[in-house]
Every structure is written in structure tokens, then in C-alpha cells.
Image 1 (cartoon, rainbow, N blue to C red):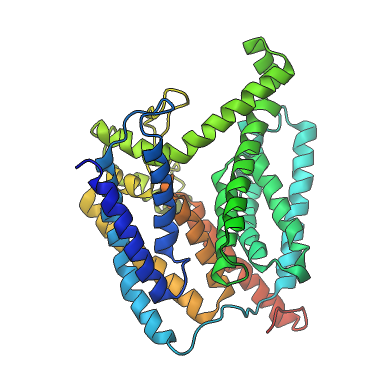
Image 2 (cartoon, rainbow, N blue to C red):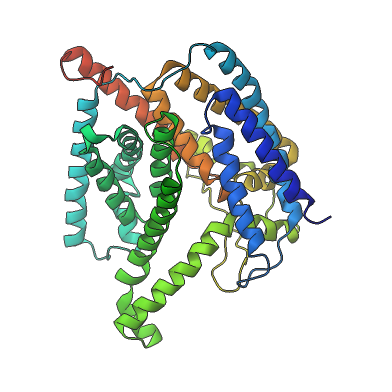
Length: 424
């Protein structure tokens, strides 16, 4: 029965999601944030199976996620029972925080000011146009401004979480981050912090899941996606495009817009369909654990001076004849391909234990530091339908820089007790 893996997958997700929600008393758990988006994208892939230039979907590829989600759920179930028992009769409100927000605001303002000056300098002196890869790398892809952008990702999640009617100015900090991220051109490092901040608002009940919110996220995601490609494909290349295809500027704009719309569907399905096509061909990659442990390896290389290891998959596969190839294989697919089944199961167990211990501690202690790190974790887990993101150095540096920010705030609070805190 060809559709059996899909039936098992959806039954598993429904059952485990309900159990997870009851144990953790929230829908926004690591398991649900990982499983539900994959289920939605899988439904889209099955709907377009064989259409829009796509080949036939390889249903056995779903078993990788069936097993992977079951393994990931085990620590969630065990730690969820402990959390449920520890907080029974004493529910956690997650509505009170205490930290030096004034210092964090000043840091955010200073970094955005530095980026404004830096971008203006690049606009005046760089031979590269905004929208080109070289300009994006210069903006935030290396050196001091690469590190500052990493800090901004953590701060973006914080300000999204704390937005309310009394703190509308936080919108300016989020907008500043979005502008820098769009110029940087790496869509994932725009999407993950924004998603992380939204999940924190939902987790702390600062807003609630509504159809309006889901529609806003989908539309907003498409707008960000469209703008990022528009900057690269039209703003930076319209002269080249006109000459290459013999079109007027308006005609090239229409062609570009139509391509981006098609590419949006390809992008959404790239990971799931990429794994399907990869497994249907017997897997084109060879096992290579360095692709999974790249972040840890590169941390060691920072101290040894050795060359950094690339986490990028060099093997591209055609998923549709109407668009470019893809090299992404979803979170579970990447683990299975590069580690093998037994190693991937061990990795998932350890990772799930650590993730849920962090989730447990942050929720029980109402720790703003812990919650921001949890937001980063959830944002990366959400992208599991697309690719395995935990091999990137940012997965380690964002929590480290967040901890450093809190240490700075602690020092300021000790020196200047009246600096201003967010209290009950």
C-alpha cells in the first residue's frame, strides 16, 4: 500500500501532538514545532505529486520522519511527565521577567547605528550593488559585522516577544534587523529569528494562535521571500537581464516576478521533495558525519587555526523541471543520509534530551535568557521541513552571545541599580 507511510505519519503526529500538548500544557513544544510544519509541507508535496514538472513522490522517504519523530518524542514524553508533575496545581504564568532592558535597548540602538553607517559606507565605496552576493557578504557575512548580526538575531527575538502597546518603539528595532537581513540576503537568518520571536509570544501567551495570525505569517513569509529575491534578481541585475533576454525594464520586472512566484513553491517543497528524489535514486550522498557536526568542528578550528568545514551539501537533485535544482533534504533526511540509521537515532535521542531539558528549565523558572535561547531552538526546529540547521555555527554562537548580553546587563545592574528593570 503506497500511501501507508503517509497514513502512519499523520496518525503519529496527531497522537503525539495531543499527548505533548497535555503534558507541557502548551501547543508550542519542540516536538510540535518540528512535526506540524513538516506535515503541512508534506501535504503540499503530495498534492502536487507529478504536477508542475515534479516527478512522482517517493512515499518510502516518509518512513525516515516516522521513525525520527518517534525517537524525538520519547524524551519529550518522559520530561513532559516530570514537568507536568512538578507544576501540577502551580501553573507557570510566563508573564513576569526581570532584566536590564534599558541596557539591551542601548546595545540594540548602537548596533543598528553602526550597521547604518557601515551600509552607507558600502553604498558609497563598494563596487558591488545591493542585492549581489558580494554586497550581502560585505554587509553582515564576515568579520565584526558578521558577529554583530549574530547578536542582532538574538535581540530581534527578544523585542518581538516583548512588543506591546506600551513599547511600540520595539518595532523600530525589529524593522532595523529586517532591513539588515534583507541586504545580507540569507533568507534563513531572517526567517529563523522572526519565527523564534513569534513562538515566544505564543508560548508566553502575549498573543494567541488565530487564523489571522497564520495568514499573516504566510503572507509575511511570502513577502520577505519575494523581496529577498527581488533585490537579488531585479534590483542588482536588471541591466544585465534586459541585455541577456532582450526585454524592456518593465518586461524583465514581470518575468522576474513570475519566476519568484514559481520558485516560492519549489522552495517550500525543496527539502521534502529533495529527500524523496534522493532516496528514490538510492541516495546520491555518502555518509559523512562532519556535515552534521560541522558547528562543533568549526569551533575547534577557531582555536587551532585550521580551515573551516563547509556544511553545504554539494549534491544537487532535480525535483522539478521548471526550476533550479535543490541540495536540501529536511532535518531527518540529513541525519539519516550523513549518519546512517543507528547513529541518527542516537543523535536524535541526545539532542531531544538537551532540547527538552532547556525547554523544561526556561518554562519552569520564567527565565528570559532561557526563553530567548528556546526561541532560537524553536525557530531552527520549525525549519526542519527544509533542512538540518544545527550544523551551522550560528546555532552555537547565538546562545553564547545571548548569554554574554545577559552578563553585560548583570554588570550594569550591579553598577547602576536604578538603570530600569521590567518588573511585575
